[in-house]
Image (cartoon, rainbow, N blue to C red):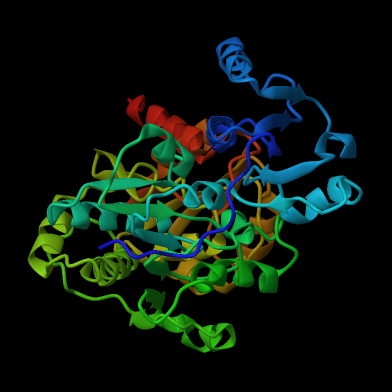
Length: 435
């Protein structure tokens, strides 16, 4: 199944590699580079980014840890710079301008690890929404066929950790973000899946054109022997990117009637996963078995509890307006909706018809109330609360039998929570404590 792919150069012994960000992917990249004989400098603005145990472990490897504000001097003479996914590539320019005679190569942790694979075939998934579910479905289908699978990347386990582990999987299933793709130059999946593109991360990317270009970088190194799986509504957009791989255009289907996942969008995700997996020889029967066994992932239209005939659903991973549209369309019961947080952009007014038709009440919480109030104030009863707990308890008091109380914030969580998982977990705690 392996097929040799062109990869970028590897670090040479004694060369300097600067890793920016001491998160999980940054630590994995630092360990991999150290193993390969590089001089490694790890930077993080947060002076409390590392635990004492982490700092001691890095010190044993000879990693030069520098915490606090960055400076151009820290990047001088670097051969490689590996930025955290949260560090926009464009922002590095202020540090690299006079860094060395030849500019260092800036590469994502995913690209770095790709260069150290032993030619294992990759199935990679990107898109504005649905990435994690689709990648997880693909991994389940491949496992049902009998393959040994590594599932990782943006989904949780960095690819560098796989390389360091010494494991050998038959297929690597990787979720990859626009942040990572923007700093990939030779990364080339045998099968690439691009689910959708809607406005997102415009606080990171310069504009939609840059965001779209980053997503389509998934296919730039593929050739005629590879597979590109794309949402059918991307067909016109794809014409501008000269895709060379064989293309499959996906729509939602009823191929897997035994699915336990909610919503038409998940029928689409299942079909996309299947079209990618059949490229690796997965039978439809094994794919169907995998789908039938597959459980909804946490914080993605997750059924939390039914109380007094009211269903409570956690969709904290709904961080965009387009994801909110999907969530609203997933139910045929009246909705009492929880929204709020750090708004990332999008047209809330465009959801007016769905809100008027399906939503009985909106409880806002935390930041960004002004965006929702301006768009929806005449469509449904709407009230703001400073915290999620107050908002949930207000909806629980007014909900009627047959209603769904839906947490689908359409925002990031960074006003009140560290991440969407913490927000979803708090919602589940609050619901579990309702008398």
